[in-house]
Image (cartoon, rainbow, N blue to C red):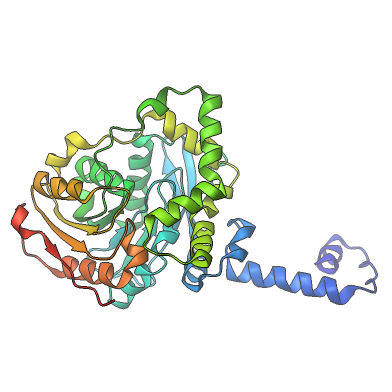
Length: 349
């Protein structure tokens, strides 16, 4: 590297020291890293052991999205192939990233679906150095601009956890952009960020600092999944907090927190798209009764329960989730909300 820079500057390269083998090894590792992962990802991506997460991380790219107050280089995973059919667009949950889809996205692609994974404004790996507002209005405007610039066709919008609130808000505001909805262990009945919106900024930043901490993230990961081995729990925690290591993460999260967050309860009845609700039977974070309530309140929905599964089925049971999404995408059957249509999917264990 020094040789190359010196040559470009028009001066003689420095002499190679005795320990050049060590430096060559370090340089070689840096080149390998640059080739495997985009350079905007935090260096800690190297510590991730999960091969599926590493593969998906290598596909993340930034695309320019024009907003009213400037352009944001927005992180996403583009499909390997684009088709004429309705694309599937995968959102993620609260304070997460597209790496949530490390197992399910490849399965959807193998099934022949054009599949995008998009980072919600304020989270993920977008370039927010010139921090835009990260409130609800900015989030749905950002998603709309990304959709109208790159996707351009009605999509099957998939939202897990708080991503379900993002999906509902978006589908009501921009119905022409959404063909169908898939809501996974939906967090849609919280009334925004509540009292957190009134916190002094100093206290908000202290809370956000705690949110990034390894112990809290480890606890949240263990709560989200059933019987996760410690080594896996640690690795998945590192995957889940990777985006938190970007320098603007604290500012973006506090901005969202004090803005009031999502409150979509009044919008649920206005969702016109066919909707598939997927729920993990053993969800320890959101009660399954809320899934049944959501099924009853949505005008045109079906619900499927996955046994022996926690809050994030697309990570824990990706084969089942991908199959349900594929079947739903290809199904044109309209089903009215009816509590009797609740069913359980048998999963081999």
